[in-house]
Length: 368
Image (cartoon, rainbow, N blue to C red; front, side, top):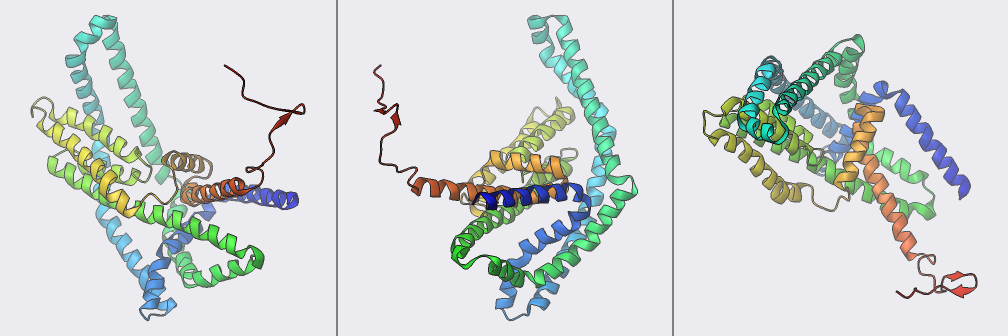
C-alpha cells in the first residue's frame, strides 16, 4: 500500500509539472477535452434518437461553432467599443466621484480628522484608480501583443473543435477502455467514485454556465434600460464572473454603483441610482432562490470557499489551463475526501471498543 501511494504521489507531481511546463501548448487540447465532456450527453441523446455517433458529433460541433461565431460577431464589437469608451471616460468619472466625496463626506471627515484627511483620501483614491487603469491597459496590451498570443488564439479557435470532435466520437470507447484497466475487484468502488465525480462536475459546470448566461443577459438588459453608461459591458462582466460564487454580483454591483453615481448624481434624485442597485438586488434574489437551486442544486458538493480557492490557485499556477482544470480537480478531491472520511467512520479505528489508556490507567474527565 505504501509503495502504491508513493507511485501515485510521484505520478501526480509529474503530471502537475508537465501541465505547468506545457500550459500554453495544452490549452487547445484541454479546452477540446472540456468541450467534448460537456457535449457528450447531447451526443448520447441524439444516438438514442437514431443518429450515428459520427453524425451526431458532426451536427453538435457544427451547431456549437456556428453559435460561437455568431456570439463573437455580436458581443465582441460591442464589448470592444464599450471598453474603449470606458477607458476614455475613466478620468472624468474619477474626478466626478471625488467631487461627490468632497461635497457629501468632506465636512464629516474634516470634523473627525482635520482638513488634511479629505485631501489625503482624494489623493489616495485618485492614485489607486490611476494604477488600476494603468494595470488594466497593460493587461489588455499583453493579451493582444506578441506572436505567442496570436498563435495561442489561433490554435484555440482551430485546434479545439478538431480535438473536441475526435474525443466526442470516441468518448464511450475511451471510458470503456479506462474501466477495463481497473482491477475487477476494485471496479465497483472506482465506478461509484467516478459517478460521484461526474455528477459533481456536470451538475456544477453545466448548471453554472446556464446561470452565468441568464444572469449576464439579465444584468446587461436591465442596466441598458436603466440608461447606465457601459451597462451592457458591466452586465456581461458580472454574468461571466458569476462562475465564481458571489464575485460576479459584487463586482458588477460596485462597478455599476460607481458609474451610476458619476453619471446620475444629483440630477436624477437617486431614481436611476436606485434602479441600478435594484437590478442587482433582483438578480441576486433570482439567482439565490430560483435560478441556482433549479439549475445547479446543492448536491454537487462544491463549497463556494473551496471552489474560489481552487480557481484562484490553479489559475495562478497554470493560467487558463488551470481555470479549466480547477472545477474537475476540486470536485474529485472533494469526492475522494468524503470517501476516505466515510471509510474512516466505518473502520475499527473509529469504533474502537477499548478505552484510551495512558500510563496503564483509564483517562477520565477532570473535575471542574
